[in-house]
Image 1 (spheres, rainbow, N blue to C red):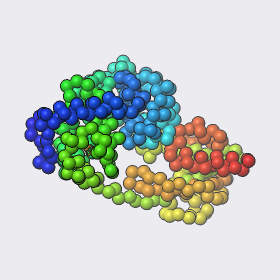
Image 2 (cartoon, helix red, strand yellow):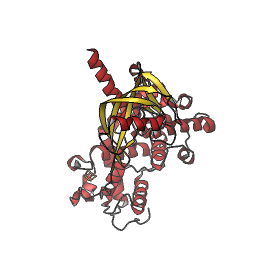
Image 3 (spheres, rainbow, N blue to C red):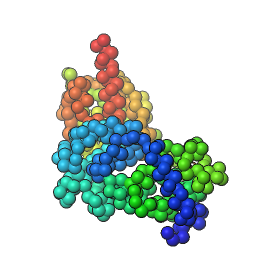
Image 4 (tube, protein in one colour):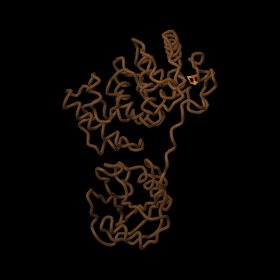
Length: 372
Ligand code: SF4
C-alpha cells in the first residue's frame, strides 16, 4: 500500500495488519452471532440480507429475511412477483424504495443473466439499489472475492484503528477509509474477514461507550491507547428538521373506508394509505378539513372526530399527522392514482405505509373495544 492519503491518520505497517487479522478472525470464530444469512453462500440470499440491513437493525431484519426467502426463494420467484406483494413482505421495514429496486434488479438479472446472480463487480454494481459497499459485501461474503467494504460500523471502527481525526464522511475521509479497507484485506477468506470487521463494529466498537476491555484488537488500537473514543470518529453534522402538519381522513361509506395508493414520485410510492394533505397547523376545524379533502380528491364529506394522532419523521421533516373520521356525502374519489373502498378487516391485506398502518391499528383497536 502507498503512503496514507490523510496526514491526520496513523497508517499501520505490515506487522500490525498481520496481528490485527489474526486477532480479529480468532475472535470472530467464537463470537460471531448466529444469523440466518451467515448459514448460506448463495449470492441471492446474501443480497437480500444486505439490502434489508441497510438502515435497519439486525434483530428487526431476521424475521423479515426468513419470511421473504420463504416466499421468494430465488431470483426468478422475486422477478415474477407483483410489486404490491413484494411491498407487503417489506411492510414495516421502511425505506420501501429498497424493495422496489430489488424487484427491478431481480427482473434485470433474469433478463441479462438468465436468473443467476452475477459474479462480476461491474454487473453487480449495475443492479438498481446496489452501491459499492453492497456489491463488495455480496461478492466477498458469497464468493470470497477480494472486495473491501465500508459502511457505518466499519467507518467508526476504521476511524479509531487509524486514529483518524478528520471527518470520515468528507471526500478525503472516504478515500482514506476505503483505501484502509482495501489495504487490510487478507488474501483469502475475505468474506469472513469483512463480516468480522462489521461484527466488531456492531457489537464492541460502539458509537458510545465502546467495550474496549473486551475488544480483541485493543492492544493495536491507538484511539484506545490515547483514550479518545468519544472524539473519534468526528460526529456527523446535526440534521436540521422542519416541523409540518398534515391531516389524514378515515373516510367511511357504509361498512367501507377509502384507501389511496401513493403514486410514483410520491413519498411511499406503491404503498397504500388514507387520503392525506398538508394543513397549516394543528387543530383545524371540521369545515376546513372537509374543504381540503374535496380539493384533494373531489369527495364531499362530513368530518366528525379525531381518530388518532401520529408523529413520524421522513428525511428532514418531522410530521404531526391528525387523522379525522368522516362520513362520505357525495362524489367519486379522483386523482392520478388508484383508490379502493375496503372494510377495516381487510386493511391487513394492503401494503400500508407506516402512518397508515398506525392509523389502521388505532381504528381496529377502537372497533374491537366497541364490540366487547
Ligand atoms: S479498542 Fe475500543 S475503540 Fe479500539 S477498536 Fe476496540 S472497541 Fe473500538
